Length: 410
Ligand SMILES: *Cc1c(COP(=O)(O)O)cnc(C)c1O
Figure 1 (spheres, rainbow, N blue to C red):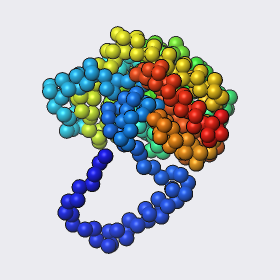
Figure 2: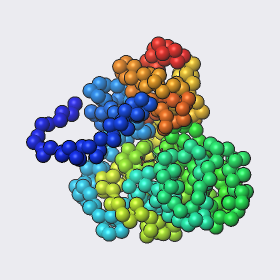
Figure 3: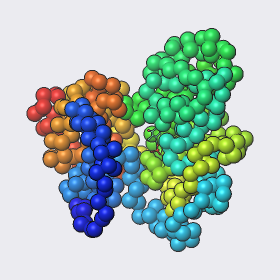
Figure 4: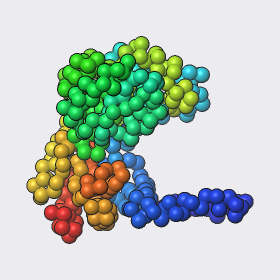
């Protein structure tokens, strides 16, 4: 546990405290709505079985799909990079923060995604912001977005000058209507943005249809594969590869923060667009580059992905096992076809209680409530990893059943 050391400090003046007192009221309101967040603390490495808040639990909550966060080979590669390149670049990419290892990783991600080149950003979040803001920088452009796209796409759209139109989740009829609208016809450039795998429900975008419509109506397609890179497609190449659309999608976003266990993001695209983003995208220009150990981490994980199929195989075996077991006991696991498995509760307080009771039983599955998901769609969200054993998952399911019955969820 972390203890607050009592060290001498100059006390804040009453005036400083008074000006910030509004946060008290805000917190009160958040608490009323079950939205006040006090995160649990990880006391161990991010692992399939972790120590959280001092307790050893089956961890079904991270995005550590391939269990690479604690992989000894990967750790070694990161340490070697620190020895060779130091701990950080202390500069933005365009000043003197581009190390050869950053470019090496960009080339490797480009090959992985079957594109000409790629550009790294500080996170998946900033990748989306950077691309949406840059490509949609005029009022006579149009950004078209799935209603369940990630918050970073929404924020990217807010920073863009172009207006946006939102289509109902995966509704291709609606997308077509939008593409045929007057506003769309007038637009000088159109960008359709969709998550590849949707982060809360674990369902996959209908990419073949999106790409076909985009072709017909001359729109650029951007797929955010944060939850798909290192997870689906041949060797984990993502949804574009999964649907045999290699070479047919203009921009693929990936993250280094999920299956790749580090932190960062990238846009894989043409060499030309890459170079353009590298000269104007604001997060690239005004925020420093990743520590070299992060690049080394991802280079090693890519190498493992491409040479050791067992990790992906295990991830999907575990996914299949876990979903089948939960369904067998009557849990509603929604529309998921990926390792993200929601367990629907449909009530805020109950979802929180479910999560807490499971934790007491030795299983960590976080509750997700409004506004992250719509009211009435509250749930626990689980992600199995390649590092869980069948025994871990059997244990977890037995606890879901025990607590689920107590709370009359099944
Ligand atoms: C997690 C996530 C991101 C953000 O990625 P970070 O690297 O954590 O910033 C972006 N898009 C989607 C769909 C995500 O699930």
